[in-house]
Image (tube, rainbow, N blue to C red; front, side, top):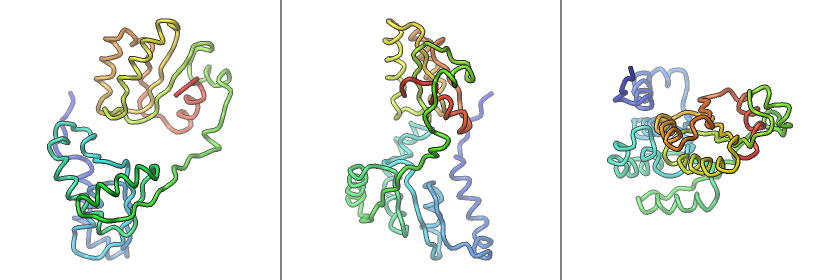
Length: 228
């Protein structure tokens, strides 16, 4: 039986921080790095002077694309206003995004009354782990057919990622290459809907929902694929 979580883990974490705020001061914590909006809000609005470094987990309104899409649409406006105000208290703001995307979001924040500099943060990758490998040596380890076209998606299963389009594309590919296979690595609120869509498209046997995987396994799965 699935349980509905009315209070998100993010908010509960912020409440826990509030309960231990004195202990944080006592052990000398004065600088904070976070990618979580609730943590930013806590340190931005709680009395006291904190040195805050905030890294956007994704430019845009994250609550709109969260795990509760209907509630997210209702709260998107207030979230934008509060988040923009909280960002004024941050000492450093980072985002792993293009300069054009950063400039566009800075302009959006200016319209909300917040004029800050968002610094680009290059996305890092372990080049020793995620290095080219010969598919024929990796596919048997992961139970993948040797000669089939294999495609892969790695990421959170959420509406903004456009996964229905990928499933529809696979349906077209399967008309000429019926052995084609799609690997979906990751989890999220859209998984059940995507599994249902795969069944309706008649490609459920060609889509492997693998859930969350450790980095070494992700690297092997990527090496198995012809495209991602």
